[in-house]
Amino acid sequence: MIHALLSLLVSAPAQAADDRINPLAANDEHNLGRHALAEEESHFKPGTGLVFQSEDGDFMMAPRLRVQFRDELELADGDVSNTFGLRRARLQFKGHVFGEDNRYKAEFAFSPKDLSMKDGVPHRTPLLSWYSEHTQMPNLSVRVGQYKLLYSRQRVVSSGNQEFVDRSLAQGEFNLDRDIGFHLFSKDLFELDKLKYYTGASIAEGRDSWESELLTDSDAPPSWQVLGRVEVNPFGHFKDYSEVDFKRLDNPRLSVGVAYARTANGDKDRGYLGSAFTDDGTVTYDNVTADVVFKWAGLTTFAEYYYRRGERSKGALTAADATDEDVFLARNGMGGSIQVGYLLPGVPVGIGGRYSTLGPWGFSQAETSVTNEHEAGGVLSYYFAGHPYKIQADYFRVWTDEDQGNRVRVQMQVAY
Image (cartoon, rainbow, N blue to C red):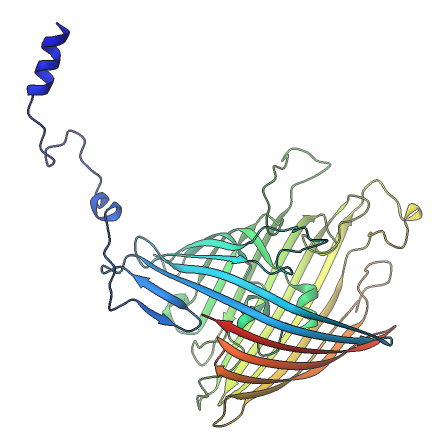
């Protein structure tokens, strides 16, 4: 009997591909099939990388390498220190899949600073960002993954597109940095060429987070973060997330942005950044920022303002049991900066100046551990090929209520 069944199966005619009992879903053959590369569309672009694109336009990938070689000299209290090495070493992939509205970006970091190397041991993974964007609805696009939150402008501007060697003192204190979450946004709300918005939620744990939190534990409530940002470009959209006016256009361009974020139940003195509280307590912050950028004929002016106020949830350890190294206070305060840069006519040379400050303004010593800090300095840059290939040198005078010092930095960047 078994022999007869096998003979029947072998002799049965094969069912035609177009006569399936359970047919394929629409577009399955196209989406899961091979997509030939468009040789004429594939190219190399400095700063973007090597671009590969399929003939049907549904798939694109652009791998890119970027490195910053930096020498940093600091003079303070009669001491001189020098640091030379790779400040940033990045590998990035970006593009789109299954259509131009499904975009992605993955970025990895390999320098000692990026990996938080201590005594030869890395304390972070190489993963900086990995997110997916879905822009089928331009007024209600979605981003999900790990990325720099669009809270403060200068933090979102790539470290490779800065006018100075690095970002401002105030931004270093008050930024929100990378987190894991999802956000809704539009880069051109209602197609007016004047409005942008960005809003959503994240876990307030920062990079490299994969930990379970007990949602029903009232003694250790889970962390979370919500934010919203609005930008107005009264003269139309332009490249406002790059700090040098390489276009040198003879028309004014202006962008004004404001943002608010609430960071709840953070276990560090800057929310999910900074130093952990000694008493194992938490802090909930209200964060506010505003910024403006103006470009015209090679001139770039940028200003930013920050405000942060938090409420502590105390743990078991009391201040009476604390030492000078213990961390109890929130970092409430305000700060800001202003910088002006100019690309000289006819030559790839830029000059600029910046002043940045922060302090505990409006808060008593019992409410914050923020102290007065200031920096003032200038930059000289030579752009061999815009931001992708440049060398920069800046000098800053840095001072607090107790001490003061000088900092000189020289940096070369190559992105390819």
